[in-house]
Amino acid sequence: MRPEKEKSLDEAMKSAGRLLSRRQHTVSELRAKLARREFPKAAIDEAVSSLAERKFLDDANFAESYFSELTAKGLGITRIRLAMRKRGVPPEIFNEVLSRGFSADDEARRAADALKKRHLSFDREKDLSKRKQKMFRYLASRGFSSAVICKVVAAG
Image (cartoon, rainbow, N blue to C red):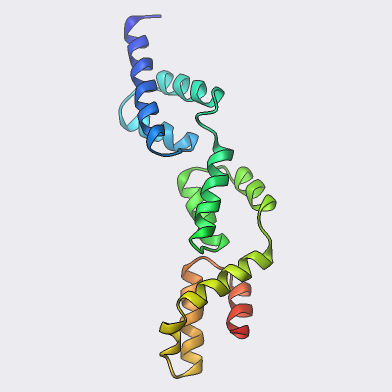
């Protein structure tokens, strides 16, 4: 191996280590960040594969923890799917995480909880149809499906 290549791989590993010490990243996120730092593609590929082998970089683990974080924030599946896609989580991993820890009742419960947290702002609206429209818009912005929103707004 040429000394320049060793140096670039070593620097790429150090840079990746610093990035991963702050928070978890997906493989695609880490590749993009290393590319922005102008490391050679070969060094990026080698660094990413080395970190993945040692389980420092794991898309499935990232998706699981990020899913938990976003559901705790009260977001719906649509918004979570968008956030995961933005972070570079492969759709098959997202679907696997979704199938393991989620049901339609969970989403309806989380939507109802989100409305309860904001009930004072909705209760100020005297007109019932306007109040329901505000509730619908709020839940839609949080990423809940229209079927779940209709169910929760009609019940509450």
